[in-house]
Amino acid sequence: MPTSPRTDPDGDRDTLNRILADIKKLLAEAEGSASPVEIDPKGIDFYDTVSDYERLLIDQALQMTNGNQKAAAELLSLKPTTLVTKIKTLSIDVKKFK
Image (cartoon, rainbow, N blue to C red; front, side, top):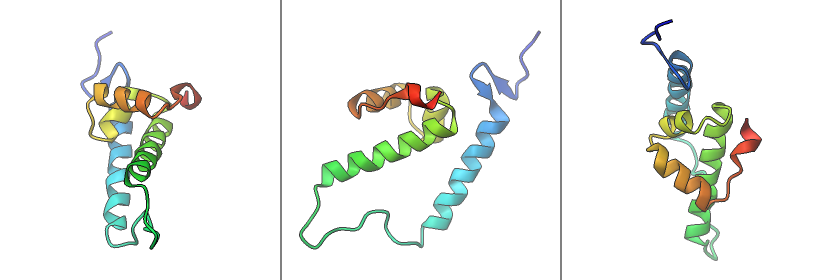
């Protein structure tokens, strides 16, 4: 049976487009809101804070895609290989999202 141009082997393209639209809408709404990170007057560890935020974004994308790394990479506008590297670097357990 031929594959519809609106789907791909990794999932429903329409569903991915709806998820992406939802994320873009949330980001647009958040533009005028408070910063997601509060800087303590004593300072923060910049690299730890960035890693924590990356982990949060990747976790959310993996949860939304049921652990589908290719779809999660698309949601985050990353190359799949970049996402895989970040998953390994941040020690994210992809199995918990499946």
